[in-house]
Length: 205
Image (cartoon, rainbow, N blue to C red):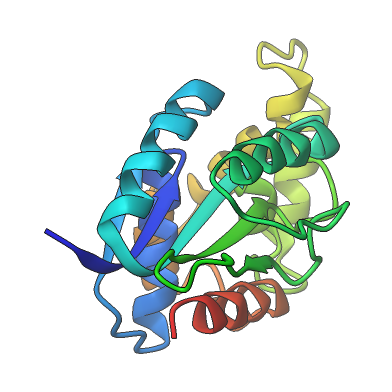
């Protein structure tokens, strides 16, 4: 069955964040979500190939840049070029990339690399930008993590430790990301959220 719009995301948290952001702005498009359950280039290739054959208008791809945003972008470029998309920019658009296919029957593709299409990082780095400005517990969580007698998580997962520590100190401790957004702990009106939603609106129209 053909749908109009689809989003390929890495996992459950990414989907929940997208749904919460869209709901916060009354975004009413019916979007089909495809989860990769972690980044895997082969699985992404297979998933994208299947999705773009069943989607009429647009497919979004949301991935973590992780430690090497250039490598992630080059991998995506190879995939999209193989699918017939042309004129890929050398670097991702800071506002989110949107690509038209030469064949008008093929869906438009949008790419968003967390956190901001420009730097290394992941979903949690994006969410850190939605913490209300001047939140005292946010800075205290950072100080607490820095002062741990032993750091058992990887350095690249520090942003995960930071935001989960901070969420554990809210009125309802430990809410998942999507629920934390809907509860107002994370501010969906922050510039980072606005930028993401502008890209989404441009893609899914």
